Image (tube, rainbow, N blue to C red; front, top):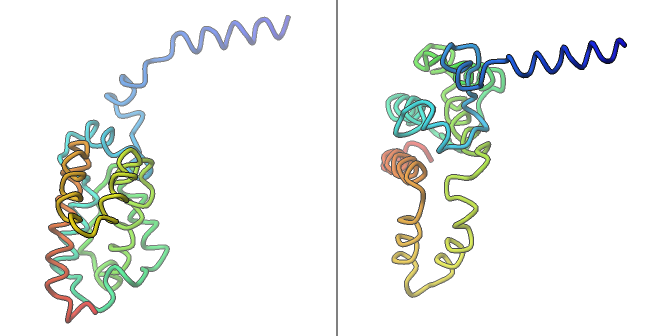
Length: 177
């Protein structure tokens, strides 16, 4: 008898529960940023590129032209604070003194974001094509360009933004090592 009441309670609970989209709209459920599919994340946030990439790259370009940027790791507690803020849909003040003193935590956060994508920036579907393009010594650049054009639009926009950022950082190679 107890099991019957419990099962009917569970049935009622699951049938009257609001849909996930409705919970998102009311703010009860928030989508994670880290570990979320890139296309889905950009669709939900209505951004062209991930906010993590935009915020981190801007701060790095302004304050992060230092020796070892993207090679040295930041302080783990700072990285975790930043990650939690982005996952809670808050934009942390990356220009706060605690983060500017440890600029490597911002670059580490950005690397962590890309590392945790369920489907990587250059996608699993195109992996073999990228590998073949890199092996072709005669037409390498043409073939890589061709495969990049096949990326899904969210991945393409994000890759383009990231490459522009890395190109800016690389112009300061004498300062960054």
